[in-house]
Length: 239
Image 1 (tube, helix red, strand yellow):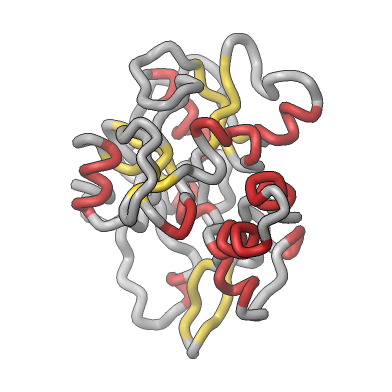
Image 2 (cartoon, rainbow, N blue to C red; image 1 turned 90 degrees about the vertical axis):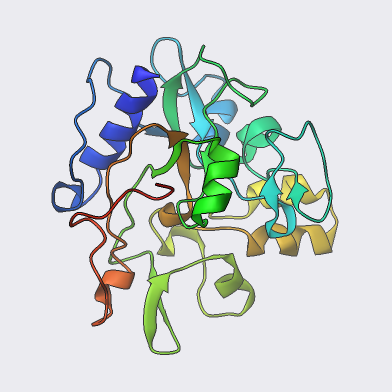
């Protein structure tokens, strides 16, 4: 798991402004792990990563906004559903990190468990099974933010459906910018395609379950005058 720790560290170090938003995180650095695009790696006919690393999606988005069924062996009910961009659908994701696999994993591809840092502590505890949910990339303050009802926040798929924003290259860290993954997943079913688009997000909704997290400020919410910094003595999500 030290290699996953390296991946998380490089994500933080190479994000814009991360020097001021990462606190109290001193992992071992041994290999240059970095962000990658699983879908593009598949198109190129390679893994998209150096050596024996795998391009692993860090997106836990799931059908209808349910929780991913990583630990439920394909269960699909009111609470758990199929991941849209991870596990079996890793190749549909445009957002991921190079990680050397080989550790114990609940995912069929051996990747670390994706999670959403915005989940409540109980949900993080359930999906991460006692670990923390570590955001793997910082938001882009200039391109990932949207103002809704007088408040800044990170853009998401529901904003596309509502016409509040376009997706594509307008944003910097958005999942599936041209809805190619959603089109493949939906297999021509329009309701499924729209649902998939509604689940899209930017960096603040993606991460991996891990034992120790860097603290990353939400640079979109930070634009609001009432924002309370989370990285000054604050515990990591899920603690």
